[in-house]
Picture 1 (cartoon, rainbow, N blue to C red):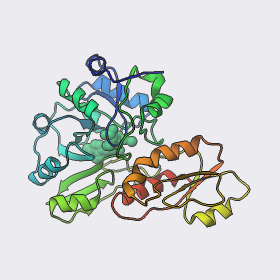
Picture 2 (cartoon, rainbow, N blue to C red):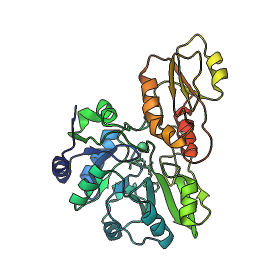
Picture 3 (cartoon, rainbow, N blue to C red):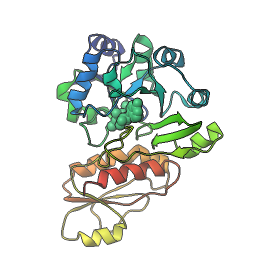
Picture 4 (tube, protein in one colour):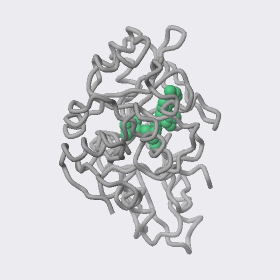
Length: 318
Ligand code: TXA
Ligand code: MG
């Protein structure tokens, strides 16, 4: 098992030695290594069993630093970044050569963000290199939103987990790019389309990649998935269809009277509370003695879109 703690100096020392450290962010925990060190980046891919075609997000603490690593930072993206960062937004920018190809899986662009977590921001400020960090889960599984989740699955492979408590947003960052004079959202996430459109004062195109030949955000059809079969639809109907089995229920706002294994994402019907709870509840249901899991779509606005996106991918393998 890894050591869990809040010692930034220890995390810094390990990262400087090319080792990996799990870091808290407002979205999910990341599995971090020196983004400028190809060996450290390779060990991120190996530790997660992540395919090499799936590029990593680079984390840092200031726009000034980012300008050293990218060829250009289009004004509309920079304005949006200044309004949101530190926050749950990743921006794709044309990379300079000093960002190793292994980070971006050979793509010309690099995904960069400034995460909003005090421990991780202090760590990033103390480093003279950025941190490549995918979500700290085995590839394809549910993302971790607290230190114990990371420890359970990857603890034996990493020396240190910076314990920053529970992630406040709970789903991964929204990924955007600037193409043909328009903002494109490539992955729905913790910053809603509505907020992006308000801040940027323009219509945003939704360009979600769904195949395994993406430009490549976490857009594989099956992802974020529990081990148990997960079905989405009308909860009452699904509950009847699976009667006779032990059923784990994940509902949005209302509980199901007959269900004994059950989690309600937000009794207030708040998509932000729901996103904060989503991955923890999926994980708890996956670890319960339920044989099948059933869930329903949440309202398709605000963070509800990103939640539905994750539910679709989590259920797809069935
Ligand atoms: O909130 C987050 O973004 C979290 C925390 C740790 O920051 N990180 C995260 O990383 O979700 P990951 O690796 O699980 O998902 C990042 C996605 C990947 O699926 C990758 O394909 C996409 O971002 N991505 C990264 N660089 C890209 C690029 N240059 N072009 C297209 N997609 C890219
Ligand atoms: Mg991930």
